Length: 267
Image (cartoon, rainbow, N blue to C red; front, side, top):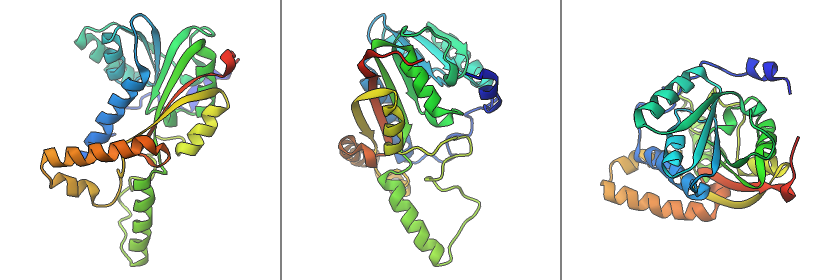
């Protein structure tokens, strides 16, 4: 593994200050909150187990998992985000070990980790498939990997692209706005459900798959919800989330819980 080559492809000063738009509609807020809730449900943190959080960002998830009794190690490549993480951990009095490193070269021993969490980060890595191989290497034979990621072939994005193509045909276009179904510049790979399953399947066996949220990115959907009373739009989004749970290939976010294949250790 050429660690220096990997680091050369990574923005070590990346900051998430501009990840969220200035105006956050109800569907955006619901998506982020429900993604976190559903991920914790799948992780099922237990007292004393070691969880490695890859691409931990500000360590918000790590702090919560530590509160639930897990021994948490947060790995982050960005020095800026690592500083944010230290501030968050110290401010919450949590015990989370923070490590500066890259997912393509995990600084842990073979088969030493109970669970690996990678939430919303796999499409930021220089070599996502290498990261998955490293996850398989790090897991104990009975360990679990939980990977949560945005699905860029969700139903909302598919419909949004079709409607946008009609608008283009009619002469409407705003070239200054990035469409929701277009991966942000800091994404290295455009993931969807099937690509994620194929990439993960080379190293891990999927035990459970969960879809989260439905119709994010559908034109006018967020603006419509913003006009509804909070009780109404939360009920609508909760119903659609239950639909997404059963159809992860069309959901806005996909969560996979995986285990090493036959307990094998991947070099």
